[in-house]
Length: 81
Image 1: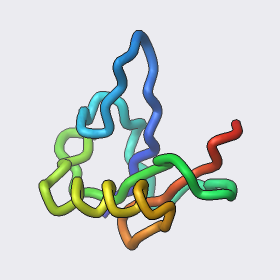
Image 2 (image 1 turned 60 degrees about the horizontal axis):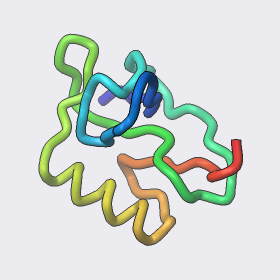
Image 3 (image 1 turned 90 degrees about the vertical axis):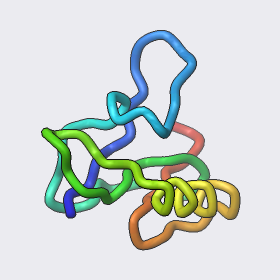
Image 4 (image 1 turned 30 degrees about the vertical axis):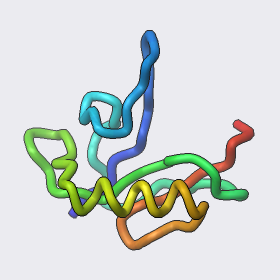
């Protein structure tokens, strides 16, 4: 499955559940710096260049963000960019 960098752009509110806020699919996860606080990228099934965000993936994203712990399909980045 490809990796999708989370790139919220435009006018807020931003949503991790909106596939439009993810960049082009990549073969490898992008480099995300520590400390791991906010969503950097997700690994998901592809649908015409956008991630398919399933309920299971949403649960994994919530776990990773709330616990500040990366998971198999969720990479986090520093809160300071």
